Length: 455
Image (cartoon, rainbow, N blue to C red; front, top):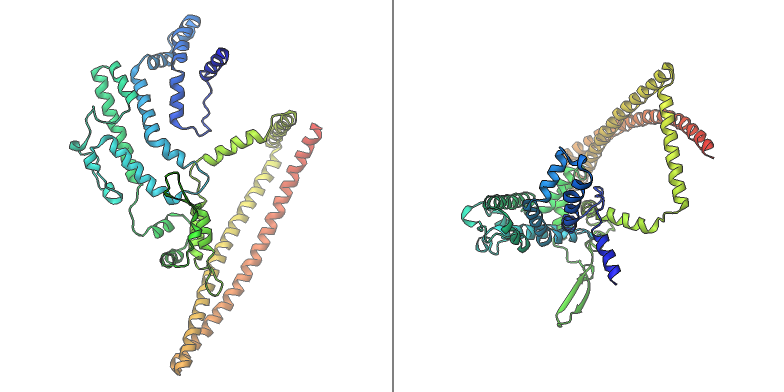
Protein backbone atom coordinates (compact mmCIF):
# COMPACT_ATOMS: atom_id res chain seq x y z
CA UNK A 1 0.00 0.00 0.00
CA UNK A 2 2.88 2.38 0.81
CA UNK A 3 4.38 1.61 -2.61
CA UNK A 4 1.11 2.54 -4.33
CA UNK A 5 0.90 5.78 -2.34
CA UNK A 6 4.49 6.64 -3.25
CA UNK A 7 3.80 5.89 -6.93
CA UNK A 8 0.67 8.08 -6.92
CA UNK A 9 2.62 10.90 -5.28
CA UNK A 10 5.35 10.63 -7.93
CA UNK A 11 2.81 10.59 -10.78
CA UNK A 12 0.95 13.56 -9.31
CA UNK A 13 4.15 15.61 -9.18
CA UNK A 14 5.37 14.63 -12.64
CA UNK A 15 5.87 17.75 -14.76
CA UNK A 16 3.69 17.56 -17.88
CA UNK A 17 3.92 19.47 -21.12
CA UNK A 18 1.28 22.15 -21.43
CA UNK A 19 -0.93 21.73 -24.52
CA UNK A 20 -2.22 25.11 -25.65
CA UNK A 21 -4.62 23.42 -28.10
CA UNK A 22 -6.70 21.84 -25.34
CA UNK A 23 -9.32 23.59 -23.23
CA UNK A 24 -8.26 23.42 -19.57
CA UNK A 25 -9.88 25.33 -16.72
CA UNK A 26 -7.45 27.92 -15.35
CA UNK A 27 -8.16 26.86 -11.78
CA UNK A 28 -6.98 23.32 -12.48
CA UNK A 29 -3.80 24.64 -14.08
CA UNK A 30 -3.00 26.77 -11.02
CA UNK A 31 -3.77 23.85 -8.69
CA UNK A 32 -1.29 21.78 -10.68
CA UNK A 33 1.28 24.58 -10.35
CA UNK A 34 0.92 24.53 -6.54
CA UNK A 35 1.32 20.73 -6.51
CA UNK A 36 4.53 21.10 -8.50
CA UNK A 37 5.79 24.15 -6.59
CA UNK A 38 8.25 22.22 -4.40
CA UNK A 39 9.53 19.97 -7.24
CA UNK A 40 10.07 23.08 -9.37
CA UNK A 41 11.97 24.77 -6.55
CA UNK A 42 14.05 21.63 -6.08
CA UNK A 43 14.88 21.47 -9.78
CA UNK A 44 15.63 25.13 -10.47
CA UNK A 45 17.06 26.24 -7.12
CA UNK A 46 19.03 23.13 -6.12
CA UNK A 47 19.58 20.68 -8.98
CA UNK A 48 20.50 23.11 -11.77
CA UNK A 49 22.96 25.25 -9.72
CA UNK A 50 24.75 22.08 -8.56
CA UNK A 51 24.76 20.04 -11.77
CA UNK A 52 24.57 22.57 -14.60
CA UNK A 53 26.40 25.62 -13.35
CA UNK A 54 27.43 26.86 -16.80
CA UNK A 55 23.86 26.73 -18.06
CA UNK A 56 22.49 28.98 -15.30
CA UNK A 57 25.35 31.47 -15.16
CA UNK A 58 24.48 34.85 -16.69
CA UNK A 59 21.16 33.44 -17.87
CA UNK A 60 18.37 36.04 -17.76
CA UNK A 61 15.62 33.46 -18.18
CA UNK A 62 16.94 31.45 -15.25
CA UNK A 63 17.14 34.57 -13.08
CA UNK A 64 13.48 35.38 -13.82
CA UNK A 65 12.43 31.82 -12.95
CA UNK A 66 14.50 31.95 -9.77
CA UNK A 67 12.93 35.27 -8.76
CA UNK A 68 9.46 33.85 -9.36
CA UNK A 69 10.03 30.68 -7.32
CA UNK A 70 11.52 32.57 -4.37
CA UNK A 71 8.88 35.31 -4.26
CA UNK A 72 5.65 35.11 -2.27
CA UNK A 73 4.19 37.86 -4.47
CA UNK A 74 3.72 35.47 -7.40
CA UNK A 75 2.39 32.76 -5.13
CA UNK A 76 -0.22 35.02 -3.51
CA UNK A 77 -1.31 36.31 -6.92
CA UNK A 78 -1.81 32.76 -8.15
CA UNK A 79 -3.72 31.91 -4.98
CA UNK A 80 -6.03 34.89 -5.51
CA UNK A 81 -6.72 33.89 -9.13
CA UNK A 82 -7.43 30.35 -7.92
CA UNK A 83 -9.93 31.82 -5.44
CA UNK A 84 -11.66 33.67 -8.29
CA UNK A 85 -11.84 30.51 -10.37
CA UNK A 86 -13.15 28.24 -7.64
CA UNK A 87 -15.69 30.62 -6.09
CA UNK A 88 -16.88 32.65 -9.09
CA UNK A 89 -16.03 31.49 -12.59
CA UNK A 90 -15.68 27.68 -12.57
CA UNK A 91 -19.39 27.04 -11.94
CA UNK A 92 -20.33 29.32 -14.84
CA UNK A 93 -17.79 27.73 -17.19
CA UNK A 94 -18.70 24.17 -16.17
CA UNK A 95 -22.40 24.87 -16.69
CA UNK A 96 -21.80 25.91 -20.30
CA UNK A 97 -19.77 22.80 -21.08
CA UNK A 98 -23.03 20.85 -21.45
CA UNK A 99 -24.09 19.51 -24.83
CA UNK A 100 -27.65 20.83 -24.47
CA UNK A 101 -28.33 24.38 -25.77
CA UNK A 102 -28.32 26.86 -22.88
CA UNK A 103 -28.98 30.13 -24.71
CA UNK A 104 -32.18 30.59 -22.69
CA UNK A 105 -30.28 30.77 -19.36
CA UNK A 106 -27.33 32.86 -20.58
CA UNK A 107 -28.84 36.24 -19.63
CA UNK A 108 -29.79 35.06 -16.12
CA UNK A 109 -26.41 33.41 -15.54
CA UNK A 110 -24.50 36.48 -16.74
CA UNK A 111 -26.58 38.69 -14.46
CA UNK A 112 -25.93 36.35 -11.51
CA UNK A 113 -22.21 36.30 -12.32
CA UNK A 114 -22.07 40.10 -12.47
CA UNK A 115 -23.87 40.36 -9.13
CA UNK A 116 -21.50 37.82 -7.54
CA UNK A 117 -18.46 39.77 -8.75
CA UNK A 118 -19.84 43.05 -7.33
CA UNK A 119 -20.41 41.44 -3.92
CA UNK A 120 -16.69 40.61 -3.71
CA UNK A 121 -15.59 44.25 -3.44
CA UNK A 122 -18.72 46.38 -2.80
CA UNK A 123 -20.77 46.74 0.37
CA UNK A 124 -23.74 44.38 0.61
CA UNK A 125 -26.25 47.16 1.31
CA UNK A 126 -25.20 48.98 -1.89
CA UNK A 127 -25.70 45.94 -4.13
CA UNK A 128 -28.75 44.83 -2.14
CA UNK A 129 -31.35 42.83 -4.06
CA UNK A 130 -31.02 44.86 -7.25
CA UNK A 131 -31.44 42.97 -10.53
CA UNK A 132 -31.32 43.59 -14.29
CA UNK A 133 -31.22 47.28 -15.21
CA UNK A 134 -31.02 48.49 -11.60
CA UNK A 135 -27.94 46.32 -11.09
CA UNK A 136 -26.30 47.68 -14.24
CA UNK A 137 -26.98 51.26 -13.13
CA UNK A 138 -24.75 50.85 -10.05
CA UNK A 139 -21.52 52.85 -10.08
CA UNK A 140 -19.11 50.18 -8.85
CA UNK A 141 -16.22 52.67 -8.66
CA UNK A 142 -17.67 54.84 -5.86
CA UNK A 143 -15.00 55.07 -3.17
CA UNK A 144 -17.45 55.12 -0.26
CA UNK A 145 -19.00 51.82 -1.41
CA UNK A 146 -15.73 49.88 -1.69
CA UNK A 147 -14.84 47.23 0.89
CA UNK A 148 -11.62 47.93 2.78
CA UNK A 149 -8.57 45.66 2.61
CA UNK A 150 -9.77 43.58 5.56
CA UNK A 151 -13.24 43.05 4.10
CA UNK A 152 -12.58 42.62 0.38
CA UNK A 153 -12.90 38.98 -0.72
CA UNK A 154 -9.57 37.41 -1.63
CA UNK A 155 -9.99 33.93 -0.14
CA UNK A 156 -8.77 32.51 3.17
CA UNK A 157 -5.70 30.79 1.67
CA UNK A 158 -4.70 34.06 0.02
CA UNK A 159 -5.14 36.03 3.24
CA UNK A 160 -2.90 33.57 5.12
CA UNK A 161 -0.06 34.35 2.72
CA UNK A 162 -0.25 38.10 3.42
CA UNK A 163 2.03 37.65 6.44
CA UNK A 164 4.90 36.86 4.06
CA UNK A 165 4.62 40.20 2.24
CA UNK A 166 6.06 43.56 3.17
CA UNK A 167 3.73 46.49 3.83
CA UNK A 168 4.45 47.96 0.41
CA UNK A 169 3.85 44.61 -1.30
CA UNK A 170 0.52 44.28 0.51
CA UNK A 171 -0.62 47.72 -0.61
CA UNK A 172 0.37 46.96 -4.21
CA UNK A 173 -1.39 43.59 -4.03
CA UNK A 174 -4.69 45.09 -2.82
CA UNK A 175 -4.51 47.80 -5.48
CA UNK A 176 -4.13 45.08 -8.10
CA UNK A 177 -7.03 43.11 -6.58
CA UNK A 178 -9.33 46.12 -6.90
CA UNK A 179 -8.17 46.71 -10.48
CA UNK A 180 -8.95 43.09 -11.32
CA UNK A 181 -12.43 43.33 -9.79
CA UNK A 182 -13.15 46.66 -11.50
CA UNK A 183 -11.94 45.39 -14.88
CA UNK A 184 -13.99 42.20 -14.54
CA UNK A 185 -17.11 44.12 -13.53
CA UNK A 186 -16.64 46.60 -16.36
CA UNK A 187 -16.36 43.78 -18.90
CA UNK A 188 -19.42 41.92 -17.58
CA UNK A 189 -21.41 45.16 -17.55
CA UNK A 190 -20.37 45.86 -21.12
CA UNK A 191 -21.58 42.50 -22.45
CA UNK A 192 -24.81 42.57 -20.42
CA UNK A 193 -27.91 43.89 -22.17
CA UNK A 194 -31.21 45.38 -21.08
CA UNK A 195 -33.49 45.78 -24.05
CA UNK A 196 -37.25 45.27 -24.16
CA UNK A 197 -37.31 44.22 -27.83
CA UNK A 198 -34.98 41.24 -27.49
CA UNK A 199 -36.12 39.21 -30.49
CA UNK A 200 -35.52 42.08 -32.92
CA UNK A 201 -32.12 42.80 -31.37
CA UNK A 202 -31.13 39.15 -31.79
CA UNK A 203 -32.46 39.07 -35.36
CA UNK A 204 -30.30 42.08 -36.22
CA UNK A 205 -27.25 40.66 -34.45
CA UNK A 206 -27.01 37.47 -36.53
CA UNK A 207 -25.10 38.62 -39.64
CA UNK A 208 -26.52 37.84 -43.07
CA UNK A 209 -29.34 35.64 -41.80
CA UNK A 210 -32.51 37.72 -42.14
CA UNK A 211 -33.50 40.48 -44.52
CA UNK A 212 -35.01 43.72 -43.25
CA UNK A 213 -38.46 42.43 -44.14
CA UNK A 214 -37.86 39.15 -42.31
CA UNK A 215 -36.75 41.08 -39.21
CA UNK A 216 -40.11 42.87 -39.28
CA UNK A 217 -41.83 39.50 -39.70
CA UNK A 218 -39.93 38.11 -36.71
CA UNK A 219 -41.38 40.84 -34.47
CA UNK A 220 -44.92 40.02 -35.60
CA UNK A 221 -44.41 36.27 -35.28
CA UNK A 222 -43.00 36.72 -31.78
CA UNK A 223 -46.09 38.67 -30.72
CA UNK A 224 -48.31 35.92 -32.15
CA UNK A 225 -46.23 33.30 -30.34
CA UNK A 226 -46.55 35.25 -27.07
CA UNK A 227 -50.35 35.09 -27.37
CA UNK A 228 -50.47 31.47 -28.59
CA UNK A 229 -52.70 29.30 -26.40
CA UNK A 230 -51.80 26.06 -28.17
CA UNK A 231 -48.56 25.52 -26.23
CA UNK A 232 -48.79 22.10 -24.59
CA UNK A 233 -47.35 21.78 -21.08
CA UNK A 234 -45.80 18.45 -22.08
CA UNK A 235 -43.60 20.28 -24.56
CA UNK A 236 -41.51 21.82 -21.79
CA UNK A 237 -42.24 19.69 -18.70
CA UNK A 238 -40.68 16.24 -18.99
CA UNK A 239 -41.65 14.85 -15.61
CA UNK A 240 -43.18 15.83 -12.28
CA UNK A 241 -42.27 13.93 -9.14
CA UNK A 242 -41.75 14.30 -5.42
CA UNK A 243 -38.36 14.76 -3.83
CA UNK A 244 -37.27 13.23 -0.51
CA UNK A 245 -38.95 16.06 1.43
CA UNK A 246 -42.26 15.62 -0.38
CA UNK A 247 -41.96 18.82 -2.42
CA UNK A 248 -42.84 18.77 -6.09
CA UNK A 249 -39.83 18.45 -8.38
CA UNK A 250 -40.21 19.43 -12.04
CA UNK A 251 -37.84 18.09 -14.70
CA UNK A 252 -37.87 20.12 -17.91
CA UNK A 253 -37.17 19.11 -21.49
CA UNK A 254 -34.19 20.52 -23.35
CA UNK A 255 -34.86 23.89 -24.94
CA UNK A 256 -34.37 22.52 -28.47
CA UNK A 257 -37.02 19.84 -27.81
CA UNK A 258 -39.50 22.57 -26.84
CA UNK A 259 -38.77 24.77 -29.84
CA UNK A 260 -38.99 21.80 -32.19
CA UNK A 261 -42.58 21.34 -31.03
CA UNK A 262 -43.43 25.04 -31.28
CA UNK A 263 -41.87 25.57 -34.69
CA UNK A 264 -43.77 22.61 -36.13
CA UNK A 265 -47.12 24.32 -35.42
CA UNK A 266 -49.02 24.95 -38.65
CA UNK A 267 -51.99 27.08 -39.61
CA UNK A 268 -55.36 25.70 -40.74
CA UNK A 269 -53.98 25.68 -44.30
CA UNK A 270 -51.02 23.50 -43.30
CA UNK A 271 -48.50 26.36 -43.61
CA UNK A 272 -45.79 26.84 -40.97
CA UNK A 273 -47.04 29.34 -38.40
CA UNK A 274 -43.61 30.75 -37.50
CA UNK A 275 -41.37 30.45 -40.62
CA UNK A 276 -39.09 33.38 -39.77
CA UNK A 277 -38.72 32.40 -36.11
CA UNK A 278 -37.92 28.89 -37.32
CA UNK A 279 -35.01 30.22 -39.33
CA UNK A 280 -33.76 32.50 -36.55
CA UNK A 281 -34.12 30.22 -33.53
CA UNK A 282 -32.58 27.16 -35.18
CA UNK A 283 -29.57 29.26 -36.17
CA UNK A 284 -29.19 30.44 -32.56
CA UNK A 285 -29.57 27.00 -31.00
CA UNK A 286 -26.66 25.55 -32.99
CA UNK A 287 -24.20 28.14 -31.66
CA UNK A 288 -21.70 26.22 -29.46
CA UNK A 289 -20.94 27.44 -25.93
CA UNK A 290 -17.19 26.88 -26.30
CA UNK A 291 -14.68 24.10 -26.96
CA UNK A 292 -16.48 21.47 -24.85
CA UNK A 293 -17.78 19.54 -27.87
CA UNK A 294 -14.32 19.48 -29.44
CA UNK A 295 -12.80 18.28 -26.16
CA UNK A 296 -15.35 15.47 -25.98
CA UNK A 297 -14.36 14.50 -29.49
CA UNK A 298 -10.72 14.17 -28.40
CA UNK A 299 -11.72 12.02 -25.45
CA UNK A 300 -14.02 9.80 -27.55
CA UNK A 301 -11.42 9.36 -30.28
CA UNK A 302 -8.86 8.39 -27.67
CA UNK A 303 -11.04 5.38 -26.82
CA UNK A 304 -12.31 4.60 -30.34
CA UNK A 305 -9.02 4.87 -32.25
CA UNK A 306 -6.51 2.33 -30.88
CA UNK A 307 -2.82 2.86 -31.56
CA UNK A 308 -1.77 -0.34 -33.39
CA UNK A 309 0.41 -1.38 -36.32
CA UNK A 310 -2.28 -0.56 -38.87
CA UNK A 311 -2.73 2.98 -37.53
CA UNK A 312 1.03 3.55 -37.45
CA UNK A 313 1.33 2.23 -41.00
CA UNK A 314 -1.47 4.52 -42.15
CA UNK A 315 0.21 7.53 -40.55
CA UNK A 316 3.52 6.65 -42.18
CA UNK A 317 1.81 6.20 -45.53
CA UNK A 318 0.09 9.57 -45.18
CA UNK A 319 3.37 11.18 -44.23
CA UNK A 320 5.08 9.62 -47.24
CA UNK A 321 2.35 10.79 -49.61
CA UNK A 322 2.52 14.26 -48.12
CA UNK A 323 6.27 14.40 -48.66
CA UNK A 324 5.83 13.12 -52.21
CA UNK A 325 3.27 15.82 -52.84
CA UNK A 326 5.65 18.46 -51.52
CA UNK A 327 8.40 17.12 -53.77
CA UNK A 328 6.10 17.17 -56.81
CA UNK A 329 5.17 20.77 -56.04
CA UNK A 330 8.84 21.62 -55.71
CA UNK A 331 9.58 20.02 -59.08
CA UNK A 332 6.65 21.88 -60.59
CA UNK A 333 8.07 25.17 -59.36
CA UNK A 334 11.39 24.28 -61.00
CA UNK A 335 9.91 23.52 -64.44
CA UNK A 336 10.91 25.56 -67.49
CA UNK A 337 9.70 29.12 -67.78
CA UNK A 338 7.26 28.15 -70.52
CA UNK A 339 5.28 25.83 -68.25
CA UNK A 340 5.22 28.41 -65.48
CA UNK A 341 3.93 31.01 -67.93
CA UNK A 342 1.19 28.63 -69.08
CA UNK A 343 0.24 27.97 -65.47
CA UNK A 344 0.03 31.69 -64.75
CA UNK A 345 -2.08 32.22 -67.85
CA UNK A 346 -4.43 29.42 -66.80
CA UNK A 347 -4.76 30.99 -63.35
CA UNK A 348 -5.47 34.39 -64.92
CA UNK A 349 -8.12 32.87 -67.19
CA UNK A 350 -9.70 31.18 -64.18
CA UNK A 351 -9.66 34.49 -62.31
CA UNK A 352 -11.32 36.27 -65.24
CA UNK A 353 -13.94 33.51 -65.49
CA UNK A 354 -14.70 33.88 -61.79
CA UNK A 355 -15.03 37.65 -62.15
CA UNK A 356 -17.40 37.21 -65.12
CA UNK A 357 -19.37 34.64 -63.15
CA UNK A 358 -19.62 36.99 -60.16
CA UNK A 359 -20.85 39.75 -62.46
CA UNK A 360 -23.48 37.48 -63.99
CA UNK A 361 -24.58 36.26 -60.56
CA UNK A 362 -24.99 39.85 -59.40
CA UNK A 363 -26.97 40.63 -62.53
CA UNK A 364 -29.09 37.51 -61.99
CA UNK A 365 -29.79 38.56 -58.41
CA UNK A 366 -30.79 42.07 -59.53
CA UNK A 367 -33.09 40.67 -62.24
CA UNK A 368 -34.69 38.29 -59.75
CA UNK A 369 -35.30 41.24 -57.44
CA UNK A 370 -36.91 43.18 -60.32
CA UNK A 371 -38.99 40.12 -61.22
CA UNK A 372 -40.13 39.88 -57.63
CA UNK A 373 -41.16 43.55 -57.69
CA UNK A 374 -43.03 43.08 -60.98
CA UNK A 375 -44.80 40.02 -59.57
CA UNK A 376 -45.76 42.02 -56.48
CA UNK A 377 -47.18 44.79 -58.71
CA UNK A 378 -49.23 42.25 -60.66
CA UNK A 379 -50.52 40.65 -57.47
CA UNK A 380 -51.40 44.04 -55.97
CA UNK A 381 -53.09 45.21 -59.19
CA UNK A 382 -55.04 41.95 -59.42
CA UNK A 383 -56.36 42.52 -55.93
CA UNK A 384 -57.32 46.08 -56.80
CA UNK A 385 -59.00 44.85 -60.02
CA UNK A 386 -61.12 42.35 -58.13
CA UNK A 387 -62.18 45.07 -55.71
CA UNK A 388 -62.91 47.52 -58.55
CA UNK A 389 -65.06 44.95 -60.37
CA UNK A 390 -66.94 44.33 -57.18
CA UNK A 391 -67.48 48.08 -56.69
CA UNK A 392 -68.11 48.66 -60.43
CA UNK A 393 -65.41 51.35 -60.46
CA UNK A 394 -64.56 51.64 -64.18
CA UNK A 395 -61.70 54.09 -63.65
CA UNK A 396 -60.02 51.82 -61.12
CA UNK A 397 -60.65 48.82 -63.39
CA UNK A 398 -58.83 50.62 -66.20
CA UNK A 399 -55.90 51.60 -63.95
CA UNK A 400 -55.57 48.08 -62.54
CA UNK A 401 -55.66 46.57 -66.04
CA UNK A 402 -52.90 48.94 -67.17
CA UNK A 403 -50.78 47.98 -64.15
CA UNK A 404 -51.31 44.26 -64.80
CA UNK A 405 -50.41 44.62 -68.49
CA UNK A 406 -47.34 46.66 -67.63
CA UNK A 407 -46.28 44.14 -64.98
CA UNK A 408 -46.72 41.23 -67.39
CA UNK A 409 -44.70 43.02 -70.07
CA UNK A 410 -41.93 43.76 -67.60
CA UNK A 411 -41.97 40.18 -66.25
CA UNK A 412 -41.66 38.80 -69.78
CA UNK A 413 -38.71 41.08 -70.57
CA UNK A 414 -36.99 40.21 -67.29
CA UNK A 415 -37.52 36.47 -67.86
CA UNK A 416 -35.89 36.77 -71.29
CA UNK A 417 -32.90 38.55 -69.75
CA UNK A 418 -32.70 35.94 -66.99
CA UNK A 419 -32.65 33.14 -69.58
CA UNK A 420 -29.72 34.78 -71.36
CA UNK A 421 -27.84 35.30 -68.08
CA UNK A 422 -28.41 31.67 -67.07
CA UNK A 423 -27.13 30.47 -70.47
CA UNK A 424 -23.98 32.56 -70.06
CA UNK A 425 -23.52 31.23 -66.52
CA UNK A 426 -23.81 27.64 -67.72
CA UNK A 427 -21.20 28.27 -70.43
CA UNK A 428 -18.74 29.86 -67.99
CA UNK A 429 -19.29 27.21 -65.31
CA UNK A 430 -18.86 24.41 -67.87
CA UNK A 431 -15.63 25.98 -69.09
CA UNK A 432 -14.35 26.41 -65.55
CA UNK A 433 -15.35 22.83 -64.70
CA UNK A 434 -13.41 21.50 -67.69
CA UNK A 435 -10.33 23.48 -66.67
CA UNK A 436 -10.66 22.21 -63.11
CA UNK A 437 -11.00 18.60 -64.38
CA UNK A 438 -7.81 18.95 -66.39
CA UNK A 439 -5.94 20.27 -63.36
CA UNK A 440 -7.30 17.41 -61.22
CA UNK A 441 -6.22 14.83 -63.81
CA UNK A 442 -2.68 16.20 -63.72
CA UNK A 443 -2.69 16.09 -59.92
CA UNK A 444 -4.13 12.56 -59.89
CA UNK A 445 -1.37 11.43 -62.24
CA UNK A 446 1.23 12.71 -59.79
CA UNK A 447 -0.46 10.95 -56.85
CA UNK A 448 -0.71 7.72 -58.87
CA UNK A 449 3.00 7.80 -59.51
CA UNK A 450 3.60 8.32 -55.79
CA UNK A 451 1.39 5.31 -54.96
CA UNK A 452 3.32 3.14 -57.42
CA UNK A 453 6.56 4.13 -55.71
CA UNK A 454 5.03 3.39 -52.29
CA UNK A 455 3.82 -0.10 -53.27
